Length: 87
Image (tube, rainbow, N blue to C red; front, side):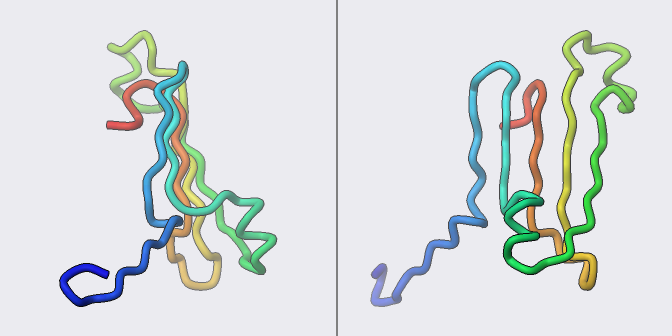
């Protein structure tokens, strides 16, 4: 309770990061978790090498994966692997 208001923490809305190599950042649920919860996930995956910055950054390996509900297009998860993704 804070300032007389009950608080609720939604763990799915919290960003988690790793400072390993390669770096990892994630928020929301994975594709497998969404399927288990009864969603029909629509998945988009974008490799960093397709970005123009990859031409000037030799460590531009990695990707961004976005999971959304196929019915509503509501984004339910984003997962990133690559340089500087926690930032």
